[in-house]
Length: 468
Image (cartoon, rainbow, N blue to C red; front, side):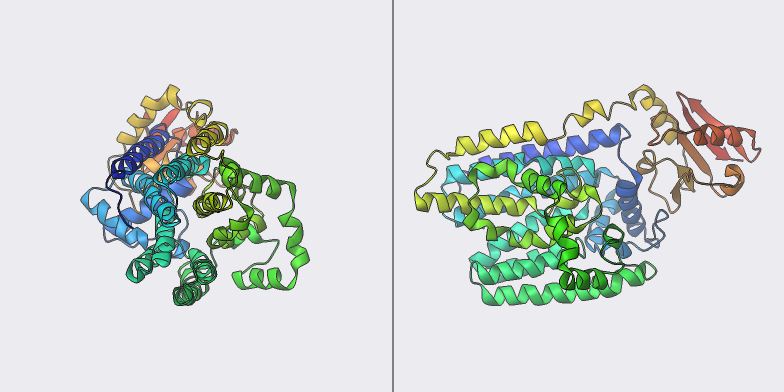
């Protein structure tokens, strides 16, 4: 990407410091028993099973690791679990990947003709973008975080004419999630239209379409019982990817209201607010590779796809930084906004971070487990074998390295103990349940009265039962 020997230390420092901060944030949330089963525990179990040569079928979902989102990158991550299986590998990988986005942002800035001072400022704007911090810890781990620097790298490589680097970057993006095939198609269109790299653009469009057909239309449904992934969030548009796409094309009135709904308009504002001072409308085309994910978020029935907290904006905000880079260059060429100095960009980014980053969650939400934290760690340590576990969502990520672990079903109508006699361990924390009800106290009482189980540990509302 080209090196600037006099400034490489500052870029390396940004990457190093941000990696440490992001890693600590994720690790702290996990250490406080605030990570959740249906994100972290699922990925941890899949990767662990792959690393041990066991069939990689999730006991939470019941399907193969590639039946989730065709994330082949998880097989590479499993090599680290062969060294030592530890969920902190996932936190480290995600922190490093997001922090490494600084490198292509810096290179793209210099490539666009910005000075070193502006290039460093855009790097800080990237690191201070609230979604980067929020997504890193709030959704525990998502393999598509690895695609963030890869996509930016692909853009730089395409402009620079580095064919092999572009190929490697595209492969890395596609290995993270099947739906990113649409991102690669959009990247191809951008390469064709903006830097005028026609053949690179055609190549990306072709590869993206082929990967879409292979993974979304064939592989994922094959490995998850005929069901396509993610369509549950688009029930108002259809039941299959093809049906949804057809309705979007043929019935624009069905989706028009979604583009201008109140929460969507607020979402637009959230996305641009952290860098709004530097954006130029003429350079908005540079967010084109993010358009497929943006459209999916807008069309979704699920409100969480339109905020800066959940992972759904992970492949959008880096492109807003690219928009910023070319906007600054445009203003310089037009000799406008001379006040838009690097320090102004940085100060505004700091203000946006203080307002929109969710660092307060560590105080307002995540300290609830402190009163029984010691009891939770003791109970987890008493699960001595890799036999089956039945537990609650916040404990599951601490015990997910086994073939069978499931969450307690509070809709269960039959006798709880009799229905779950197959489990070796049943671990319940009454203090930190996501929903409070009389169900769990009744479960405790039933297990205590059932001779098939013995109460191995009880302290501070933490109960560990072991099958006799």
